[in-house]
Amino acid sequence: MSWRAAAKEAAMPVLQFAASPRNESAYPDQLAAFQAAAEKLAAQANDIDSAMEQKREIASSNLDGVVSSLTHLRDETAALTGRPQASNQ
Image 1: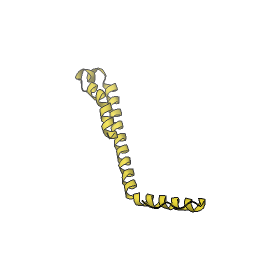
Image 2: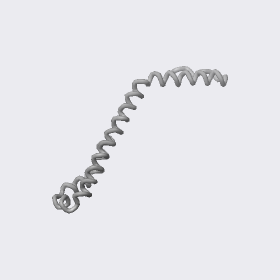
Image 3: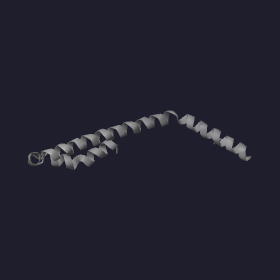
Image 4: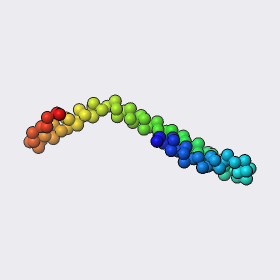
């Protein structure tokens, strides 16, 4: 589940409460604050989803570089400790 979907699900009780005409007339300031908070939460969730997608793209595009770096570190460690290098399987 994305952050946006989770935020929308979490905000559903507030939105249902706000949808009642009786509540709109009895608590206009509180409902406006609830709605503003729900919108802010949705915006933050969108930002989190966007950031996570960006991190996934960066990680997937640089996977070969990470594997190469780890292989290099393994070989250097083996050379420093005098252990035989593991073969690539």
